[in-house]
Length: 197
Length: 197
Image (spheres, rainbow over the protein chains, first blue to last red):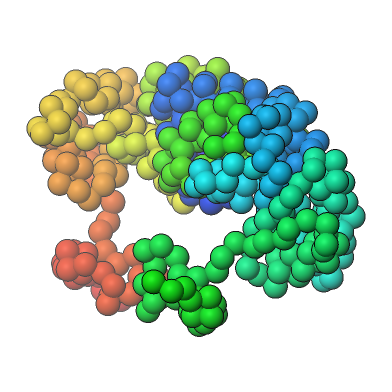
């Protein structure tokens, strides 16, 4: 590599981002070097800022820049509903859909016997606390439809049974989805949950 | 989006990198936020450093951190050969192959009547100067095999004809390439340039 070591070091760090490999990291860094003033310097500043300020919300586990995230801090979102998600990425996906008005609880993973992840390793005790302290009426389990996700949903449902209304996201044909491309499990779930027109 | 504006701003900047879109930028930023200490802070520092120090070599146009790049500064590379490339990415690709011992000249693009790019917009005058001042014996035209690349190669060959040995990279079947997947142009170039075994 002909570039000097600073640039090489940057390429090596960029290649550790998900979705970038050595080749695309080189391309990205070359682009950054060409656009030093417009892109590289602002990006360095933005990263510095986030590195200093980003933190997990003490209440729900969302990522933000304060001890309590914007959603937990907003009185408008105190609807008595908590949507339980595995991951901050899932929370962001829900927020992009702009349909849920309540608050979230980010577990930070799923229960997994194989990886020795128990309830104490996730934010499950904190969820139980919140249901009491925030006067929650409904817990929406928006966990992924994987084996571990569903195991975790069952565990949480057991722990909260009788204390609160428990719901999960509907399963069925995605909007714009074509039957031909759907897996058998989705089609049979959609058929079982069929609705009158 | 639930994340606060600093994180959104970072996502927006990351999405402007080549090869990343809004979705992969979100994923990358989430990964960075999770690995604040190990990845985000070092990356911010590396970007800051490159933003401050990166510059184009005054001699050849390579990207580095000093006025004259490492290759131009190295006496070992004064072999009397200059390899002319369109782009710093092409220079990096040549260097990775570790076969060329001489110096480079990065044009910074190709001549293009459509985009009104003339010889003065590229580093062509500087190339002519270097051929004289550095006592160059051979100029290797390693331009891309596109119409604009070949037009530029012809123009440079005209300007330097008689002063120096002019060569271009061999065209043919790539190492590991399968005939079935090659375009007609490559196959006919490889056949025309066939060699005795």
